Length: 269
Image (cartoon, rainbow, N blue to C red; front, side, top):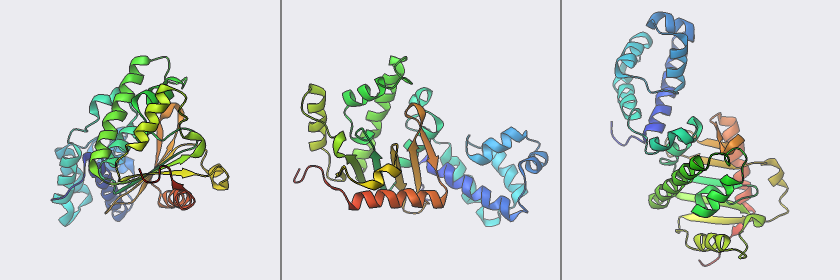
């Protein structure tokens, strides 16, 4: 196979195709598969959910049961690509599995849209702004070293997005825009002025009723050849990954509506 995406999206594709094969084989349950494979039920669930990478031998054994026919070589190649090292692996101790997935899928997204209801979204934050935002959260402030690592992960993530040239839209509430009354906020405003052209910073008017539908940060990823994904903020700056088509479509429509009622943050920059 050629043109494969990164390891996170490969793991997602593999999970989706294995789920389809299960449905074609009389909707085999986890217990039935475990009995046939001589696996524990917990191992079966982790592997089929994509929570852990599946080994070459385990996948071959599973495909013998599911009988994918001509798909076998494709699925084995997907599994091989899914086992490649994740660029953010060094940050795994301070990032949740959902955040790791988001970072991995972000690499392959054709378009990214971010919205935060009361802060600047993380893809445009300076290092100082990001550090201050995390340090203000009681969930993080007790572990300064973890904050430093999370900020370092964000800076590395921004570099990847900045150099990829994909379409990125940042939706910021007018009240979140930095006032020039401190060095940190002046630096943040300078950062916004220096954003590359493919990052479209938009400002939302304060009277948009639809804002009440989005009480927390939201990010959506659109892909060329894969279903979209959405991420909503959770406790401790974590994210919840949403892949159900009806829900991702709803979040996509909400952010599209916000975009249509926004205006450029810094015209002519």
